Amino acid sequence: MRQPKKSILNRYARTDDGKVIIDVATARIEDLYNRLDLVSPYFRKDLDGNVANYLLECAREIGPSPFVIRLSLSQEPTPKMITWVRNSICSFFLYWKDLEKRRVRKMLRTSSILLAVGIAIVAIVIWMNRLLPAARGVLTSVLAEGLTVAAWVVMWESMASFLVLWLPRRSEIKLLDRLAHAPIFLSATKQNDPRSAVGAA
Image (tube, rainbow, N blue to C red):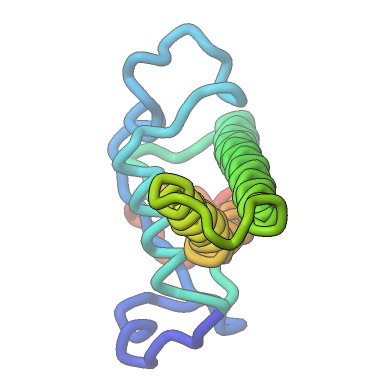
């Protein structure tokens, strides 16, 4: 992963040991979660879309640098609340990671099928060229040429899907895993030092 520019990282605060801090400020714990997901226990709740995307974009911007997540609340968090939030954020990003891995597997299956179809078409064209006489009709020649073009298009689609989509999705999976296992600090708004946060990991 490419190292981010120092000017980008200067936008973020850091812990005493040099880790980048992703700051999220909210009035209530409930504001972190999807408002349609009211009945699920905390460890199963979906994060609010804006919160999830913000964390993902920050992690993407930070790059390979180690980071922590600091949640600033208007009220002092209890130890039970800290455990709930940490477990829910970890579970959410692990679930998101699992979804991405499923999409990658589906993409690889599709690419493999397309590649197999392309190879099969090429084999048919070779068989036609060997079986049919050299002085074949115009229709047969057009069919053979058309099949050749179709084979290359299908195989190119297969390779393009693999080369263009696989690497970015693989990077995304690693990023989601980092977010799932990032240290999380919770504190009241008046506290700014993650070391002083209740239950700091």
